[in-house]
Length: 273
Image (tube, rainbow, N blue to C red):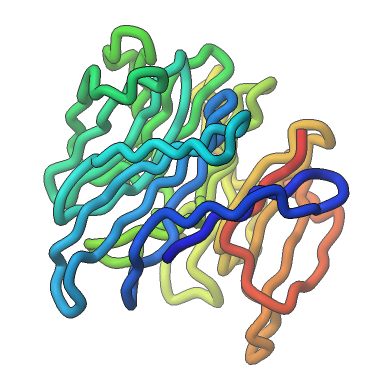
């Protein structure tokens, strides 16, 4: 089974362990999203080893009653790529070549809408106005989370780090949002050959301007934004042949403020508010 550990802060005491799915080889961990007093786990269970027969689903854990877990089937034989929460709605990016964002009512768990997309939406963020930002390989689209209408779209050729081939996704990220400033920090694909695959950019949603922040190439695995300290936090590979990883903290102007190493490669960074 797959397990989610519920741990209290700051004592790191394990409050509960929730077993939620049968797993098989290649069944990568997907996504965790906090939605009010609920924890949403998006995953995929392969029904038979050696095939692509599978069911992707949400498990919704009630944080005020950890014994209560709802199961919401999403799609058969396709992956869940991203999950977001706003307006008491759960937005689920799912599908293979034909891609949609499914809209689930967080209270009733019923499907209440669907947004069609031109390609795989690998990540979603919620901006300061409660709009949904959806990222494909070459586009960023902004949707109204109430009526699901498209507000605007931009060309934004960012990396899709969390895609693991065509059929599964990882929990990595290549976009982070400074909600107060309304600025996105993202890992963009660098022209090759180069020492590493990515470069760090910012995109100001107010001015609609992209800026290269750091000319140093990155093998980034995930990115987050520390809203309290106003720092970009990047999880990266460690030194060559180390097998480990590193975390670097960068100012919005592109200056490296701090860096430290890890025994393992970081795939997800969460910053405490």
